[in-house]
Length: 351
Image 1 (cartoon, helix red, strand yellow):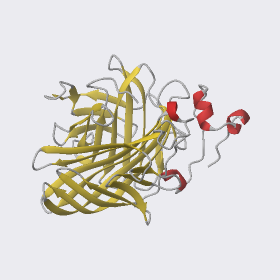
Image 2: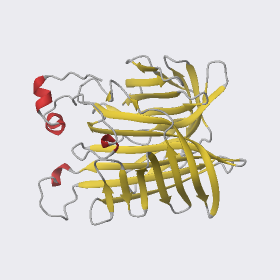
Image 3: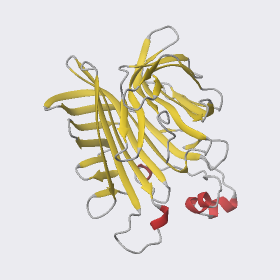
């Protein structure tokens, strides 16, 4: 992968460029180094979503760790200065029970309470953790009403999103993120639901993004899907929404089971809301069924259950919808399952 840079951009660190209003510069992503934290960037998250089965029971699950750099404290010498904050969200969708259970954590890094290590992925927030062990992602989440102890093992190569891992999110070059995915992770482990333990297997999707300016001032949130198709292929699609609900920016990628990758240009991905559900908690109206046009096919994305809204006001401050959903192709066949995420419907997302 040969990435050419302008000489000035190559000479300055990414943080200085972003603070000066420059483009987020291209960089060659390398692993396992880039699985770890990037504390020089303002915002970062590690995001694992998946489906799991045990006998006749089906579940969706998500585990997300967020890191936020506090710019105002970076020059402070005190070890008590909160220079980095760590948040974590986790949820389980009980398909047969038609309900969502979720929990959250927040702490500043340090003092043995929370950490996001550089060099490889090792995230810990009190008794919650997400770490790479022997090449697999291991999530341990003893939450209030559920528990997760899952290993998510890669079966395919890392998928670099955007242009070699640099994903545009707006018209300005600085409105971008470094972004890669690991689709088709093989899931094994245990899931505990209100005291009952299930040994589960399934498939998962991992996203890792870090950025200095993810949303433009004109944007309010995004709609995103990450879908593992039954034939081994993978689909990611997103749109950034403007204040009037229109598409401000869009993008996506499709990788076939054989490894052929197509990265969508702006305008090639279209989200059309079909059926909506209104939350009794936030009064936000979410499209829980979408028409999705991509270069790969015309799809429907349909929530497995409607109420998969998460109230994270005790940590990140946002209310958003994130849940297990089916992917249906243009012939009406269910061809995959994954996660749909919708932010900025209850209120503009602040990052």
